[in-house]
Image 1 (cartoon, rainbow, N blue to C red):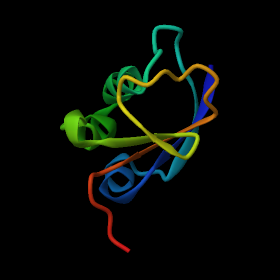
Image 2: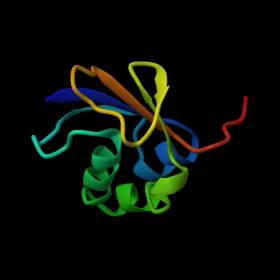
Image 3: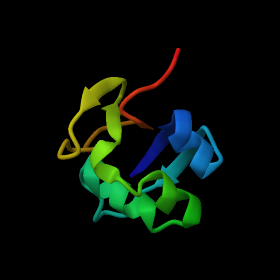
Length: 85
């Protein structure tokens, strides 16, 4: 499954990119699975998702829980709990 991942605020700063297309392995079925998979991609990702419990997620521009399925999704956004304007 290929998705567009978007990163906001300090999540973006730690990873070093605002957006990327990724091909997820079949084992990644939920937003939480995606976070765990991302943490293993490198130091910047590990730092961005160090406290995965506070990361907010939006799937196709709708807020979602970490347990939400990625089935049929095209985009997933990751952002900290409070973002400035």
